[in-house]
Length: 277
Image (cartoon, rainbow, N blue to C red; front, side, top):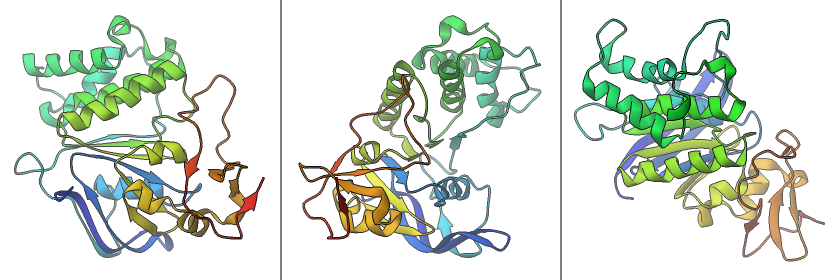
């Protein structure tokens, strides 16, 4: 983890007068899965926006060093993608949009472009619905399509904003498999999540709550002390086995929806103000 994909030094990110991320310093290692976790409205998506170059820090620096060449290539899969479902757009057409960053809007697709689109659809298990209209798909299938669009784009860094929230289990497993397969290809994956266990199984964690509270390996970051600082003691609980878990009412799990892994995190010690169930 000596090579960094992102380096932030005393960075502040703001929307007008609203500071979303106050002065924070952190690194994101290259070639790994990094999860950005924190309470609702903590600034998680803001960090992805800044990495993607969609906003400029108001203070400090945020650098994305070149990876795999003389320029950085970033694919960004948003949490919510607005689509005009009145348009008769097909799955393959949506995935093909991922190639526009290199082909432009008006250039003919090359064999390389078509191979990238077909590979992305195959990896996400949607090749069999490639000619289907996006509006006719289930929510889980549409999520696969948007992730495939990101995969089809030439990229060294893949940004995913809550890709595993509120989807069916097969889709969650498919996306999870792709996330870890991306690092095998040398790609850096940075994803936001509300799932404590998802963060625990990643390579690197940014714990965010209006600033980066802690950054590093999961065992160093997801301590009871750090989580209390980020979430406050009211959302943290200990069960009879001293396992720490979050009770986040902003993102409840729905029956039949994705609940990725057991929502627990083991800690060696816990502060006295954490509630015991």
